[in-house]
Length: 516
Image 1 (cartoon, rainbow, N blue to C red):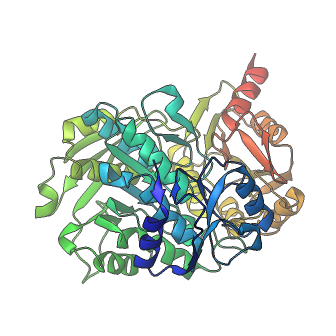
Image 2: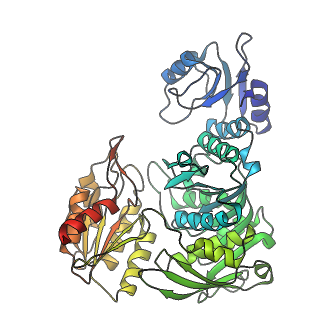
Image 3: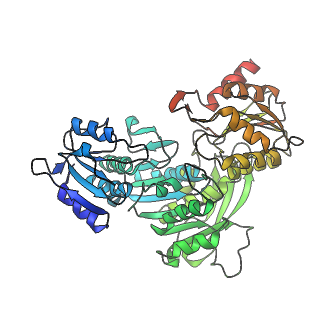
C-alpha cells in the first residue's frame, strides 16, 4: 500500500484542512508506510505529529529512521528536508489520510457501531454471535475487551482502547477485509469523536443505547453537554439508526438522528411496560421478560409497527448472560441482526450461548454465597447490577469490591458513592488503574460520599486482598460483586501496565483456598 503526496494534498484541500505545504524536489513523493509513533518508522513513511505530549525530538527520530513527510499543525525546524503538510487539525488529517492509505476498507465491510454509557460491549458481542451465523464466522470486532480481525488465532488480540486511534482502526479494518471478513461490529466511545478517531467514517447501522453522566473530568469531557454532543455524532454519521426509547435525553438524541437520516430509517425499541411521551414517534420494537435467574435470561421480542414487521425477528430469545438489563442489550443486537438479514431462528441460535470475558462471570460457592465479576464501572451500570441482584436474591447482603481509575472518569466517583449507599451493606474500596493519582486519595474521595449508616466501608488498596476479604466475610446467602476491571489483566500504575491476574482468576483462587 502507498499514498502519493499529491493525493494527500488533494484530500486535505477537499476537507479545508490544509494551511500550507512544503514540497522537496529531492525526496520521494510516494509514502509506503504511515505512523504517529517515532519508534515505528519504515523507509518512506508519512509521519503524523499528534498528541498533547508530542515533542519535536520525535520528528527528528522519525526523520532519521526513514520518514519523508510529516503532517502537523505547525512547521518544525526538525523536519527540514522533509515534505511538510501543515494542517488545521492533525487528528482529522490523520483519519482522512489513513483511510485513503489503507484503500478505504470500510467500503468493503458492513459496519455496525454501538455507543452508550453502558452496554456497548455486551451488545456488540451479541450481534457478532448472530452475524457469525450467516457469514461463516466472518464478523470482525472492535471492542473494549478484544479486537478480532480474522479467523486465525493471531487475528484476535486484547484491545488497548475502546475505539482505536484512526490510523490503527483503518489498518485493522484493512486487515479484516484482506482476511475475508464481511461485517464489522465496533464500539464507538465519546472520546473517539472528541479526538477524531472515527472522523469521516459512516456506519451502515448506528446504535444509541443510553446516556448518563460519565467520562467528565480534566482529561476527558469538560461537561455533560460536551459528552452528549460527542455521543450524538454517531447517529449523525449512520445510514440507519437504532435508539433505545427509554434513554435519558431522548428528544435530543432523536433530533440528532433526523438531521441526516429519514425517520423511516430510524428504529426505536423499549420495554413492553414503557409508556412513551405523547407526541414522540411510535416505538417499533417491544421486549418483555419471560424468566431471569442465575443461569440464563429469557425474553420475548414483539414487532409493533409496519416497518418493524418487515424484519423476521419477533419471537422468544434466551441468553446465557444473566441480568434483566441484558434484555435491552439483546434486543438492540437482535434488531441489528434483523436489519443485516438475519431471521429469528438464526438470531436465537446465534445469541443463545454468547459470553463476554469479565461480564457477569458468576461463581456459585458452597459457603460464601454468589460471587460475580463484572465490568460495571459507573453509576448507571453499578445501579443496574446491584438492583438486579437485590431483586433476584430477595434483598441479600450485598458486598462490593470496587475502585475508580486515576487521571480520568473523575465524575464516576460520586456515582460510586451514591450506588453503594443505595444498595450495598459492605464496600471494599480498592485500586483500579490509579495512573498517576494516589489510590488512597481516590478511595477516600469515594468513601467521603457514602452514608456509613447504610454501607460499611473498608479501604484495602491491595486488590487481591480486598477480593479475599470480601469473599471470606460473605455468608452462604450473600452476594459478592467485584466491579470495574472485568477481564483486564493489568493495573495501570504511573504509566506502566503492571500485570494483574484478572478479577475472575483471583476470585476463583480465593474460593478454592477457602473451600478446600
